[in-house]
Image (cartoon, rainbow, N blue to C red; front, top):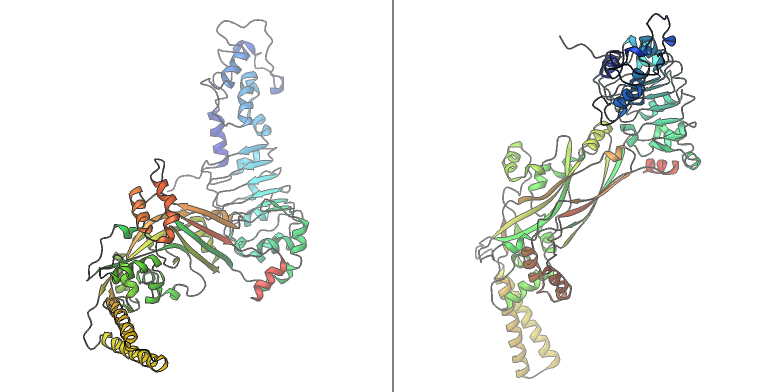
Length: 629
């Protein structure tokens, strides 16, 4: 058998016992017995302390006893934060303890607060409080309220933070003068009715999804002036505020924000088009710049003729609730998206810095081995992915094989999809320029996701490429060489016919052309075909972005996620030395190099800018225009 239910009256009696109203320095005893008349009077109002000029030996004065009760340093003082009612009862127990009878207590209390006491049942003994006007039962375990056990004088009933899923019993016979009902942070699913005198209603942070049904039930409350619905799934649709304001014209405050006459004008007529409005939420996720990334390439050794040639790219990931039908299929599976290499050789070429290209060309002209693997990759014309990645990853077995290569932090939580920005090469400031719109119909799951927040990660992708040996038949070098000679001969013939220059000029020009061809042949000797290994992913930083404020009425979450410093002074120096070879960057790096030798220099922390916006309509026209689109 389970433990008996904790009732409101039992908690109140235990609370009165802990006040020690009948123990020293309160109540009656040897410390004050001579102050009172014999207890032969019939009414407690007539039990008055006797006036004495002197206190008997062994007894305390009233003032001394009050000091023991009220002084914060006293061992008999009430705990800090005690209510005014508790302090009054303690003082009354010192001044006139004979008044503290049950009849007095039940008629004295006009407000009762039982918060966080594991109460699960509102029992009928609550009816003994004849003048009770306010009852606060927040943060308990109440699942149902029986209106028959509530005093008829009750004006304020606060039940925030319980486990109430239905108020059908409460609405059947509510207290006749009830003006405020607080049901926030419960598990309500349906609308309310039969509360005719209600002026204030808090239904925030429940599981209410039917906006039109809820508004229809609230329209039966003619005196309703203050309403809270934020935190519910229904409040996430773009037209929520406008539709509610236009439907409930008597509202003065919605979600703790005053309803203005301008709002009423802007949303006029929207309630008549409710059947055409889509029940879906829209978000826009924007990811800005990434700063403080360590350039790992400066720590790698120079590649040999046979490789490996290493490329690094960086991107940001975040998880979000799955969009409308088949969002995951757009990516061919989340894991497949994570491990697949750069899509094409062209994109790889675009990501190579111009400095690396220039260095590669200079080293080739001097006949030396290139200093930058990026230069090698830029010269290669054909990039071949590894066999495992050339096919789409469909089966669970293939995903299981790829799983060990993926950091667990890159796997989305159940019910979400992992999104990522475009892969970018290293830079002091990596501009992601990412924007994605999410349209969601499952508002209940969306609410749960917003309460949990999203995880943001910065990922480094490392790819090793190896030269592929080609046969003499497949090699394109002879064809290109012959083509180059034909072009050369044709050019010489045209120049001979048109200009008719002497042999010396032709010989000089031929020598220049020959030197040019020899120079070009050195470039062509670089490997044209590369085989790529599976990428190695490394999480540089991970953090949680809280999204609960979007449920609480805020339209935008904008933050800079700071993951701490991952760069060092030595790594920054190596990066600046490498970049200083570029003539264009010398002037810009000179100041940076000077600052690095300053004793107060601190590397920039790893950070990323992120914004998540909940779309909201500001007028009826905007809501209807979005419907047309």
